[in-house]
Every structure is written in C-alpha cells, then in structure tokens.
Image (cartoon, rainbow, N blue to C red):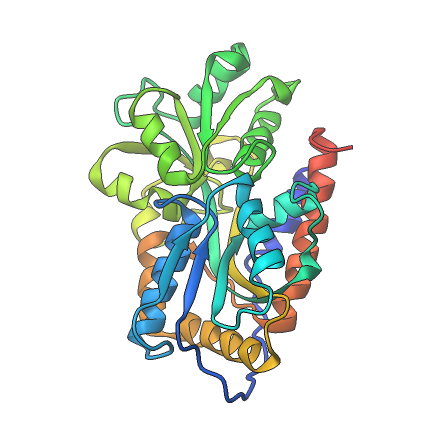
Length: 327
C-alpha cells in the first residue's frame, strides 16, 4: 500500500506542460461548478482560479461560481454529462477526490471518458487537524488514542464515505498499526468547510482535509494542524507544521487540483480552456496563491493531464482494493 501511495504522490508533483493550442473561441459567460458546498477545496479552486482568470483578462466580467453538492462530486458530474454536455462556457473543479470516486465506481453509470480533462493548477497535500482546544497536540498521540479505541474518535471530511478524505484516514490508520481500519469512525460532509464547522462545534474530534481548505481556519487560530501528509515540510505559511513522516508515521497523500469540461465541448473551447489554465498556472498571481495556500507544483494540461488522471484512477483503485473499500 505504501508503495502505491508513494507512486501516486510522486506522480502528483511531476509536471508535464501541455501544448499551446490556437483557437477562435472566448467564453461569453464563463462558469465554474464547484461540486460541493462553499468553503471546501473545490470551492477554493473555482474561486481562486476564476479570480486569477479575471485579473489576467482571460474571461469577460466575473467568473460565475455555482456550488452543486452531493455524492462526493457525483451530482455535478452527472449534471454535466447528462444536461450540459455541449456547454463551451463551463468548467468544473476536480481533484484526487474525483479520481477516487471514479476509481471506486461511485458515480453510477459515469466514467472518466465522458468529460474532457483540461488541466491542473497544483497539488494540495492532506492535513490532519483538531480544534484549537483539543487535548491532542501531536499526530502520534491522536493515533495512539485511535488505536486503543477506533470507534471513540470521529473524523470529519468533505468527501463521501470511501472518498479521498476518508481514504487518507484509513491510510494513516494502517500506517499507525490499526489492524482493522474499517473500525475507524469517519463522518462525511458536503465539503471541507462544513466538516471544519462541525469540528469547531464539537460534533467530531478530527478533521481530514487539505492544506488549502484549512488555511483560513489556521490563520484565525480556530484549529491546529497536527500533521501534513507531504514527503517534507511545505514552504511558506505551512512550513511550521510537521509532516506525518517526521513524527514516525509513514503516510503521504497529495490531492491534485484541476478542471474538466463537458464531453461535448468544441475543440476550440477545449483549446481555449487548456491555454487559459496554463496561463493561470504560470502567472505571478497564481504563484502567490500557491505560496499562501500550501499548494505544491503540478503543471499538467491537455492530453498529458488526461493521461495523469487515468493513472491516478488506476493507482487509487489498487489502494482501495488493498484497504478493502472495493472488491
């Protein structure tokens, strides 16, 4: 399992730039669907990339962000495939969570080849956090308590049961010596923002999410990050937080962030959005966003990104089978 996870994580930080494509199309009413409630990673991706596109003049006016929660991204995926298949002005935030649900067959009747994969804008490493007043001050202390009684501690995440936030918890549990990881109590919410809200309300004891989701709550002092699931400490604002590995728990998990478009999108529109995402990624504005939100480099677009997503799905399918989430 660790070798599979390491392979997935290495793939998530290796960049291949896609080709520049010429086209005559430009969106007249650009829209980005965030497949979760406001406050989570998909919402962050839509809003930050949309603002950068506006600042760079890549879209006219304001990029509309539409939150379509449900099914770990499945409701949005089905909406795009079944009702908005030829919408050239639409892009949808995606991530490792999307690949996880596709790998596990959790989007009934839907496959990755029903949409067009546009590009990535970074890799968002997983984090484990607790409320500021939690008695747990380190990851080993938390995992020791969880090992003693896996059902006594509730972990919240913004993905569905079996999704990426859940999978990270199970990987940590396995690396910590918990024999039956299925005993770990995971509570799913419709986005990372809602999961953190429930953490602060005391409904759950732990938050499993990504660095970008936690940034605002870290800055406000509402939560404390026990570990980042990166190979080494992140630069910038997250450099103060230890990795799981340096605390003796060998677990790494990177969540790529990017976009797909409708499968019936025209070639001109596809080329435009691929170029636009490449332009955002290479801009000084986006470098600032990456540094402040804990995003790691991941420069993939067009066919290279599609190939990467296919590999991500295959790796997660193997991990899910090993842990027992799927047969």
